[in-house]
Image 1 (cartoon, rainbow, N blue to C red):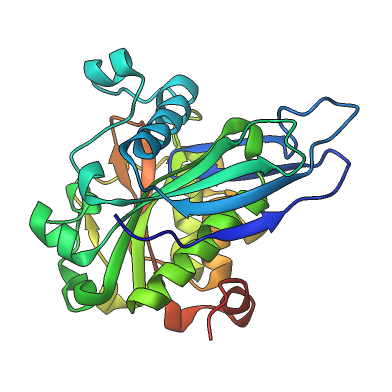
Image 2: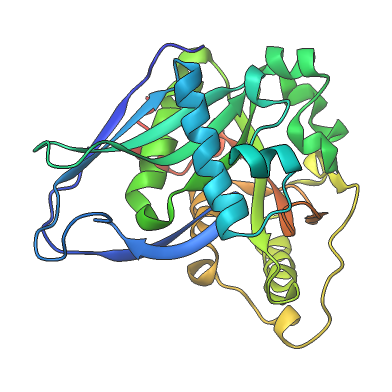
Length: 291
């Protein structure tokens, strides 16, 4: 496993704040101070580390199950339902990034509140490809693969959907990429389809006008999302109203590689997204602690 690279973020405000965030398979709003008594907020500190034991990987898989299956209704295999773990064949070959909420005063136990998994190029070659290749033809990205990582299974605990957790994850990822001389990250940003797909359709129609990748990088879904044709499916989606994870990617300089795929297991529309370190905006470059 990768040696730990930590990123710590203190949270010392004593008032309860509410914000929204999404993950690869989830979106919701919740208090930053989840688990603390309403009359006495806990001074949580967010700490990002890389899993260095099977027990920590299991903790990430348990959180993923809670978000993807119990919360979002993903149709996971029977063994996942029995174990209450979201596990697939990629996990053993990935690095698992974890964000822990720690109470500096020792009144509350540490809580796992966020996770990403990272597939490095050598591991992807051993596996025969990236997870996203199950959904997309990624041939146009062939020249980028030697220095490209895949991000996946991102999720944040329902009680901790705040910008702080996402920023903690991204800062650790930025350091990871710089230290290992990677320059590109790709992954799928998912949008739920509980509304019949209207929002996902409208989102794709909006981002293809403003954040579509250059023609040489565009990829093709194996099972394209069938786009809605009603008024809601054509409504403009501004950056401000996009799901927070997608909004964060695009504000940072990411591009969308093509039309969304339909993921029947998770019942989501998956947008292929690419972020290159050379395209990071100055603000995100500073937040990622890049030179």
